[in-house]
Image (cartoon, rainbow, N blue to C red; front, side):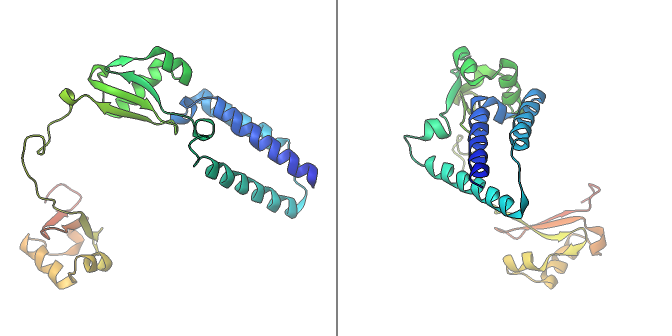
Length: 224
């Protein structure tokens, strides 16, 4: 049993270190070689562990959970964050790609550009900072001169219309959602009649805005 526990803990830690060493790019987006590499690493590690009986299986699961919780707790300490989780890395600054950061992160330029395009930014000259987070995700901060105009930036005040609450889904009334806005079925039917709806079967989706109780109706055909 002690041999089993020692082997499990050793291989678990080795696997975590190896995946950590692969870099954040492997976590940001799984390319075919990233996925295959991680799959093989885990498969080789697991195949080396011989589990005899239910007791060892339960102990093994418990140990993995304990190690996971322990590492999560250790990551809360600032001094251990760079080792346990890693640090943010600036990949683009003032519209310029930092080549040395790409090498450190093992992120290719093609992968960086693809990730940025996926976030809706095709021109890197509009980007103030692109930061590779410890999780592998890329945060993009746009330059102020390139930021889209908003009512607030133009000095206009807008009223919050509130979250649309679904009251009908595929022709069926949602009573609990009606309770959230303090309305009943009769109120809903009256609102539907006011917009010309005669039967619930005509409605694919309907919602009510919290702020003004205005109705959104969709028959799934683009008619309303």
